[in-house]
Image 1 (cartoon, helix red, strand yellow):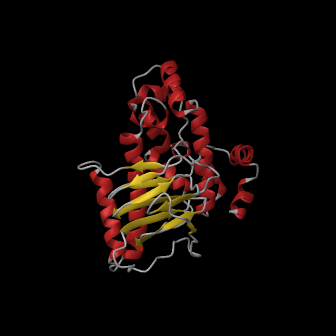
Image 2 (cartoon, one colour):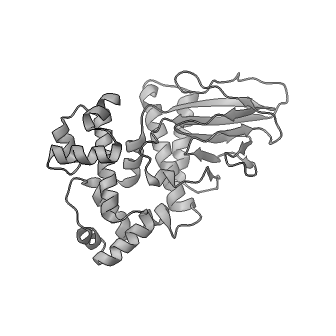
Image 3 (cartoon, one colour):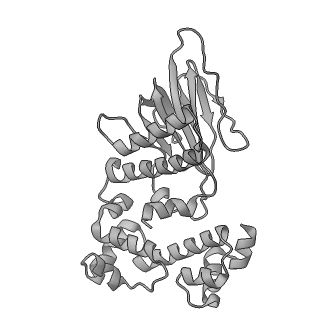
Length: 304
């Protein structure tokens, strides 16, 4: 598994939701804070994002995409001065649609909006390090894969066909990965530090892939550095500077995160969970798990 895919899989707790709606000016919605993440895509017309950090409103044009990875409350309107009304989600987490017809001559905006259910208990630093919102403006020829995912999702929501109940969640997951990949590898303003640099650095990215591919292996710093042709000391300094933790500290954190996910989602014996998390002894695993989570593995599983 690569790091980005693993980070999303570790935090996902349920099915994503989305809707394709038409808004007729004047309109304005106040979206409450959520535990997950959300996105908005302007397919036609224009809109204004009222950011969660109370900075200046952001104009969104056709093809613009906004990701709110931290689930912060925010506003979306046809104009910054339009009064906002609360957007109340349905019981399944989706947002209600509005009528497809408005007043004669009213400015029309076609939106594609969605939300993801993510757990913040073990938020991966790759996501927790994102800004309050990520704005990916449309540019001719830029990010063709992201645009293709948006087009496919929009088409499925506009004209559902057999299999849509499976295709739409898969496309939503795909869209989220493309959004994050596009930001980290192409749009992030500072790619010299942090996770953007970590994913672009051959030695650090190679070590991260190795750790995620086989977290149970008894890795050493020397082995990880050798994957990128670096000495132990040089690799440790670079990894710590970009990732924010020393290599083996990150490995321990990821092992415990993996263990928590297995306990939540599978009925595997504790011995198997321990082995997949890099512990040959169930007792040693239980001790390490309780130190990290504050409860024993069995108690954590029952609560989850």
